[in-house]
Amino acid sequence: MKVIRFAHALFASVMLVAAGGSAAASQAAAPVTAFVNVAVVPMDQERVLENWTVVVVHDRIRELGPAASVSIPDNATVIDGRGKYLMPGLADMHAHTWEEEDFPLLLANGVTTIRNMFGGPIHLRWKKSIVAGEFAGPNIYTAGPIIDGNPPIWPGPVVENAAQAHRTVAEQQAAGYDFLKIYSRLSSEAYDAIVQEAKAKNMAVAGHVPDAVGLHAALSTGIKSIEHLSGYEFLARKAIGPGEAASWARLDESQFESIARETAKSGAWNCPTLVLFQHRVATEESEFLGRLLARDEMRYVSAATVRSWLPQNNFLKNTTPARAASSREKGDTLRKKLVYALHKAGAGLLLGTDYGNPFVVPGFSLHQELRNFVDAGLSPFEAIRAGTSGAAEFMNARNEFGTVAVGRRADLILIEGNPLEDVANVNKRAGVMLRGKWYSQSQLASALDELAARFQPKSR
Ligand SMILES: [Zn+2]
Image 1: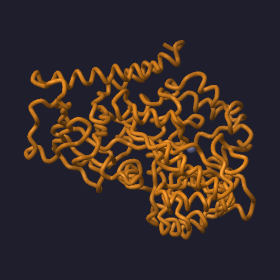
Image 2: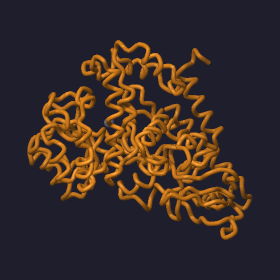
Image 3: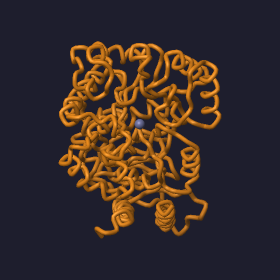
Image 4: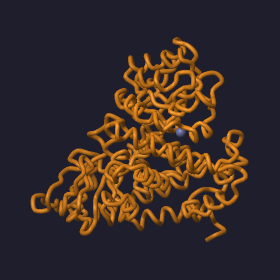
């Protein structure tokens, strides 16, 4: 709750700054901001537009163009963009937010949109409150509760037949969820019924490829996004049977090209969440655990959450394999090769982290995933696209977010280096704009400091 109050205060102070820009501005006037002399990285194609002006009115981009051709409104708060780059805010396309404490972390890292992959009533409430401007949070697209077979892995609706599929899809649509999240234990029959219902109701199906369905069938029936490259490990299963880590370490690379082509042809997107697997730690790996705990971003994680992430306490404890390090590294290398094969074949990729999982810290982890995509062989433009314009295309929301263009929501990051030269430059932030509200780097930093002081009082 405290964070929400903080966000309120931040929101209010930004409004004051905006109103202070013009004595004539009435209370009802929409806040106006102009970024001037800035290099725009619009992310519609690989280009940089030097020395442009971008005018934001209320929560939308109203006008942009070369500095000489755009006049700056009298009542605008002017942000000097000299030597800086303005790019769209990032989307984390595989997120699990259950606490408001995530929001300042996301905002401070330029993450302005999330695709929430396990929804409940709280997400529908947050969505409304955030749109109403009650507090600062990302734009949320949310799944409903996870739909699984019997017995389910997580608490949520169980679907075993067509009647249950009909009811569950109708309920989730009526409740206001944006898409359906399916899971590993669905039967073939249940999966088919869900996909049919979803098509009839124009809802996207995203999630794990169910074990009983398999990748080929999932691709041929219209799954819209596959999470964590689930289903691809079947390439190794024939030889050694199920078991994620072991399968990944033994994948047969020679099949990557054909399976990537099949994926591209199906129109399915992949959200590989490479960063998730990089943070899996086994009980006996004390040195690796020590390194994870020593990272700077752990200051923003509560002691209770850290405890729940320790290998002996977290929900993976019974499945974390021995010799985790070698299968983690081998798996990582192979996943990156598969990501590159998918990319080369023209299959859609989404930038996502699966934060909420052990040691995957909201916001910070999305920058690691950007780096992962570049390490896999994508250019910085292609990597960033997976979390901006590509993500918007996937969500059928190209007019809403993902590019810097007239009419788009003003979700923007101002940075001190060209992101198309190096994705690390996305971390050199001068500030973030969320729905037209400007947060300077110092405001963002004090929000983080406040979190750290709450969570790590002894170290202050
Ligand atoms: Zn997830």
